[in-house]
Image (cartoon, rainbow, N blue to C red; front, side, top):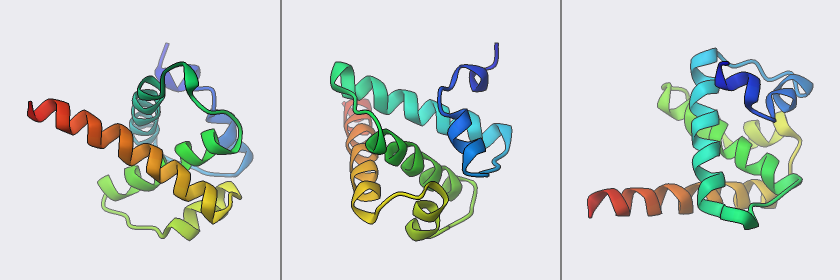
Length: 104
């Protein structure tokens, strides 16, 4: 089945009336899965998980040439600035480590 049927937070997008293209959703899911793998068994729950998903959306928008503010994304998910900062930090850690490994 397509990954979007397996992504546990598709309902999160629906409940907050966030509409993204299937291509964007695939990218968000791939980013989220990578961060989850990097977090290992200590992967977070609740508001921090939502903040990571919000960070994935934030950076996916940028890859599609759109540049919403973090406040716009926070408002979509109804999360606090501090929590969004945590999500962005987790995103940056996961992808910085990934790029450093790729470079050898």
